[in-house]
Image 1 (spheres, rainbow, N blue to C red):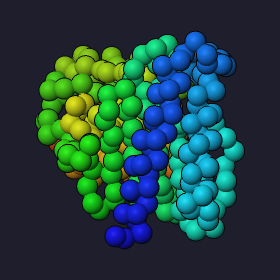
Image 2: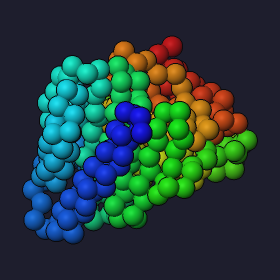
Image 3: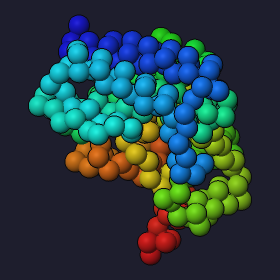
Image 4: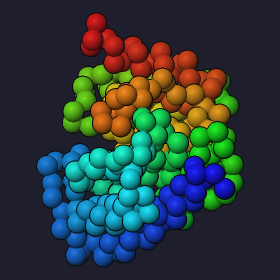
Length: 266
């Protein structure tokens, strides 16, 4: 087993155990402590507990690796590897009792994502990918959509308060008037996994943090999809615009995104 494959096995097991911990909190929502800065910016003690657990396990098994997560300060590593964690992606769903949330875990090597795992405890699905070795859900290979038109499926999108609302409205308007339909379930990582699985034909968002997107983007690549080029030097710390989807429909997704987001810049 290669070093990368060992890390993948570790990551799958860790994400599933983290998901079990999150699920215990989910089944006891009345005991949660929730902090809110608005519906788009929620955090609970479940988020912090799950991330603390994941960080402890990584530090125990890979003490030389860096860690970058949503809820706690980054840890510098010396190995070149960095683990990127979203302990509960879809916190607004989680605290509302909506079973659409996941644990997202990725491992990058000098900014290039090598491993991605997304565990959805409520459905019992675990998605994973290893660079150069494919993408899977519960052991079954993933294949991105082969749709050739936006009218042949749904395109996911996300929105956060830091985004330009007018740009997102332009995107959705152009998608619908062009014969397509949008999808949003408030968990960006999970929607990206669905793109890798061919359940959605694409995903567009003005900006995503690395903990929300890099695991899913690797899955889409490994499932035969297309993603916009990523900057390894800035991806982990600063995130990225996201345009991703099936290989045939990707040019249409790219055109939609450019028209919506670059209109403001121009």
